[in-house]
Amino acid sequence: NEILVEVRDLKVHFPITRGVLFDRVVGHVKAVDGVDLDIPRGRTYGLVGESGCGKSTLGRALLQLTPPTGGKVTFDGIDLTRMAPNKLRGMRRRMQMIFQDPMSSLDPRQNVESILTEGLHAHGIGESRDERRRIISETLDAVGLPRWALSRYPHEFSGGQRQRIGIARALVLGPELIVADEPVSALDVSIQAQVVNLLDELQDNLGLTYLVIAHDLAVVRHISDVVGVMYLGALVEEAPSDRLYSEPLHPYTRALMSAVPVPDPDVEDRRERILLAGDLPSPANPPSGCRFHTRCPWAQPTRCAEERPVLRQIGRSRVACHWAERIASGELRPHRVDA
Ligand code: SF4
Ligand code: MG
Image (cartoon, helix red, strand yellow):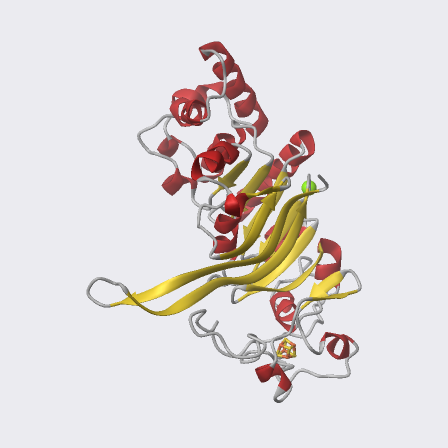
């Protein structure tokens, strides 16, 4: 199967409850509200957006760690959303997650050997103790941790090494898909590149498929083949990585890009700075029409506030904006530009 993961009209709506027994539903937080995307096998899909836009919920819903309330997720042709819980447990081995803060996701009382062995036992991997030892040794080598790490505890490692332990814990099960939620945002900038390079190298050697979630566009740029941008529970743009960064089409993507510093200090940064008005609106009460219209520097009267734009193909990109072509041509100018 060319496409390993297929997401169709995925929804995760959390009820907002009131009352003594919290049994009165007064509304819903639409954390994910109708997302369509494909992740080709062996590729990396980067998912970006501000915190609170629903990207982590989407990652968890994809693995069925948070149950979707609508839509469908297909993994290798298998519909996960209709799968019985015991069958789903068997699938877990093929789909693993890496978290932002390895310290809070690793049990501080377990040494590395027991952290890695636990997963093998849980999934019945390895016929004998020797075989399990061999799998664990190979995994340590793959993530660049020394053998002596096995007898040590998470707190004895640096942040970067702890993330390697987190990666090893996922990798030891031999997964095909890894969802990495902010895998480097808790690390020093100097260490971030090492971990991103490790993920890239593992992908090349093992043919892994990734969904990498990050609020920082720079992090996913080089590792991603395709990047999707989320705003208030929906994808607003998706494009091949080179295209998204060189020619962002959606106003929200343009604003995010304009905030990314130019790497070379000797090169004058002539791009326009696009400042967004206000904060991210509440996903419990999203704006009408285009959800971005309350902050969009290009918003046009009535249509933007009334009609929700659908994600449509423009060249190699998919964009959810009524005016994307006229914005790209410069025919429509932004209302708010800060030089
Ligand atoms: Fe901005 Fe309107 Fe496009 Fe939404 S549809 S991004 S409000 S111009
Ligand atoms: Mg790659």
